[in-house]
Length: 260
Image 1 (tube, rainbow, N blue to C red):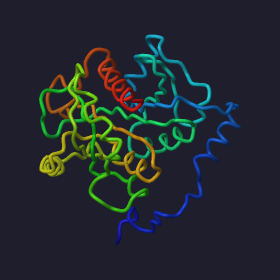
Image 2: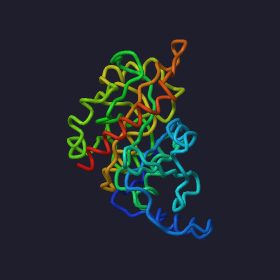
Image 3: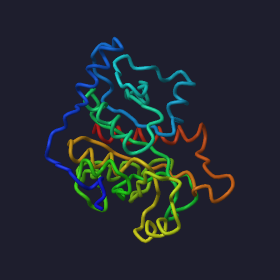
């Protein structure tokens, strides 16, 4: 029996359920006035960056965010205003929120997800600018026909060519594996990813890049390699304030290069 995920797709067809209409009804029901959100927004699946910003008084709820499922905080870092949405975990959730962000005024979306190490490139933690992501999830197949990888827009990737050369943290470039099932990372699946030279496993990038390609939006995904999938004790250490300072440095460098 053919897999339903790959059947009955019409990639050129418009959607019946539109994000614009959903947000219209959300604003009506929640009495939220229409207005733009920050031009640069961040997806923070772990929620550690947002928690640090809120705890230190740097972030506040944005008044114009009408999403049913999430909160958008705004903050300033090195003179640039950002929006940040915490706890957006997984491909389908990430793309749902990305759709909403871009129709609400976002122009550049930065995803900063934690990831498990696949091909070792040193002792975690460190960062990977994700150039392409293995499509081992479902959401990307609703945007693009089947193919092994989703890729970052080449022109946007070129924009970050040497953006992190002087960073105080390690920022590599390479591929990741996007999975919908983190507790099904079998020895065989990990072995295949290693044979592909994949640096880390995460849960959002393949879908976000597929969305970005189809909708022609600026999306850049980073993997914060923080763990070895709990195969050692003392894993998942991200650094000071759960890695928030390091992540904000990378986000700030990306934003400055995009503005240039």
